[in-house]
Image (cartoon, rainbow, N blue to C red):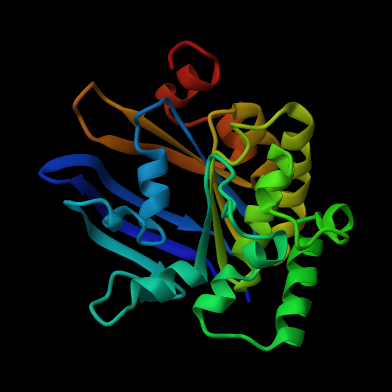
Length: 258
């Protein structure tokens, strides 16, 4: 069951440095939300706070709330490991476990949960690879290393690994930036299919990609070097790209800065 996220008054720190200030937003369930903006404005930093990946960096911390179906994922009784299972992440560069087979890559998360029954694992591998549009390409070489796949296939393998544990939300940090145009198109098609089951948030430098894949877009910006990044505005993607409310958004979209 896909769930939405509510972010309230989020301040994100690296040590004493305030990197992102005052972010509040709603992320709709079963839809794609894109984050755009110039480099260094905090898009990926915000993304990593949505599943508590930010805090693995020494000295990093957040203030504010991130609510998943009303529950604050930063609550004192909440296990961050469970948060990261419920809110999965796909990174910029494909990162399959290099010494593991394709099969073992997909079930890595299930093994950590102690789920060992072979029939269950077999079903999960097929379901997840089907879900990542990779099954037909790899079903005859599941025991071969995942690192032997092409870049685009490796990224789809990482998506299969993320959805194998059945998350509610899928975060994607520039998932196509290391891929060629054909592989990028395959990932974009996949995102359109996955949003029927998952809430998806994608960070992208490619504005055309944001316009193609998302229903809603948030534009982040820095007021000056050394100042915190801020969410300038968030709205339906079509409105952001055709009639934004804030002139800074319009200047970025039309290429006047950034």
